[in-house]
Image 1 (cartoon, rainbow, N blue to C red):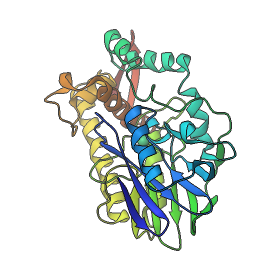
Image 2: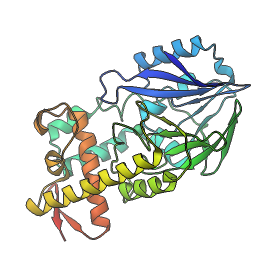
Image 3: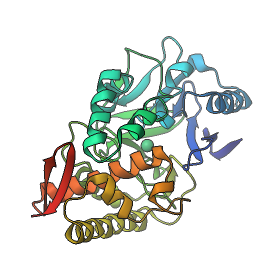
Length: 325
Ligand SMILES: [Zn+2]
């Protein structure tokens, strides 16, 4: 169902069936040309919800450009399906370059080989192939992304949106800020009730470090209305940023304590000892895809500590094991 947020501004509620994120907030600005911010997975439930809500608002896709806050498929999945000739799909260059790569089997083989050294079993890695939504449910191949840079402006329906480069959640995450109205579209950079997943990325040395810098970058924006990628906003931007920074500080401390008490664990084993807000009694009962994201998050914290000289890691056989330095 659509929700009117202000003149020419709507929220479209896209269900993410079976996903702990529950929904995606897609935002639509209407005007001479429309701008759709984020789209949902490339799967039937998202597609139907999107089409039904676009119809409810009488949206002409031939006059609709699309902005993707980041590469993740719950945001980018339907972009090529909704794109019409002559329209733009905006995304940062970093994430735009990752989009086709994410459909590349060779790259996934490389990622899954790394899963093995991070502690996943061969059986788990084989089961991940084809079931991981990060690997499937993405947009069709597309060659004409319009790359946006930090500071670029997009004008739609009386809204002047400034692109703010906020890497961390993904290497090229972008937020949008409407300075006059003090509206802030946070994508997955800042979420409420749930914390954005911060994973390690191929080619990124320290994604948590990048994320924390990107939190400071937007902390003091005088944002009055917040439009996150999932769920509903709660409280002020500054309070939420401070909470998220504290959340990662505690997690870093927790990871240090685990490595200190149990030297030689893999990221997978460390993730199994961390605290998670998920409906599973123990690590063994974690859904496999959630283990994948949890291990990625553990790895991002391990990278942060390694880059700063607190930890070191060694390859023992195929195991990547962590120790206090
Ligand atoms: Zn995301």
